[in-house]
Length: 161
Image (cartoon, rainbow, N blue to C red; front, top):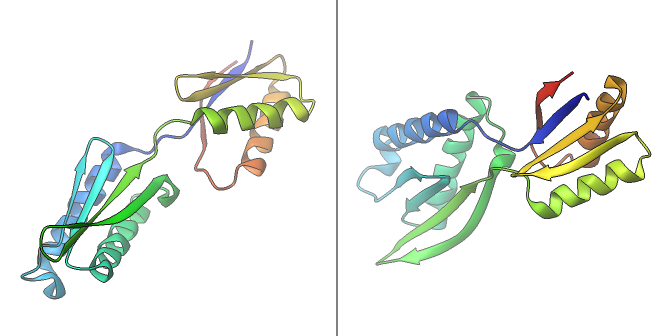
């Protein structure tokens, strides 16, 4: 039976390279000289450190540009709150989204069920597997998912015929 998986995964290799390039640019820019400005990646969290909110915004802009150049959708980034750390430093943690949350998966399942397309959707390990008898129905389900969930960078893979 034909099927495909709906996923929400960023290329962590490209994210790592973008963070490294951002750190390199911070090290060479004149306006960051002598400041604690830095950016680092641990697991799926990017930590930005700077003197003030303004500096964090500049670092984030550099990071977004580097991610865009590497074709990583910036909608994968989930910004946290700005926190004060010792002295006059501030930090912000940005999480890289990975996998479809259960709530969103249920919402997509509801869209598919209400559309009367002859396919079934099941949530499996942060992915949403859609199966059906006809390839045209699967393509219609993909179009429906793209239309109904425009704010998430969803992709489709593992297509089986």
